[in-house]
Amino acid sequence: LSGLCKTGRIDEALSLFYEMKANSLRPDLVAYSIVIHGLCRLGEFDMAVWLYDEMCNKRIHPNSRTCGAMLLGLCQKGMLSEARAFLDSLISTGSTLDIIL
Image (cartoon, rainbow, N blue to C red; front, side, top):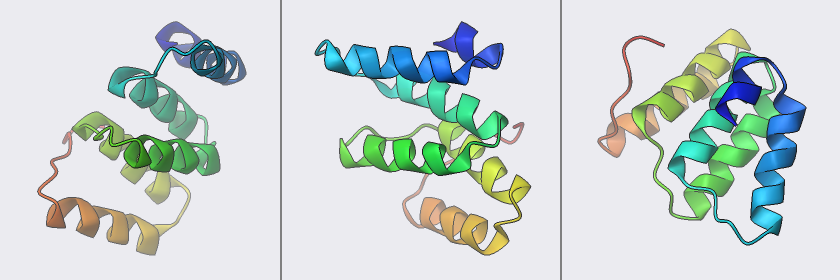
């Protein structure tokens, strides 16, 4: 997944991600984070939000890298009020962020 995302082959990464799920392999935090980060880097923010929500609904808690990618993606899309709300929700739950995004 990481290699595909790093080389901009997000469609292949998503295909592999869904193939994992179809074969009863449960994606973990690392798998979700890699794909979410890759989606944010390529500006595919709607899909990143969808996966982030799915991850949280499955009670997989995002790490600072995942949250940082989401926050950066919101800011890059000009969604500053959403970025602020996201940051506020992180602060209220005691989450931390990577300073270097």
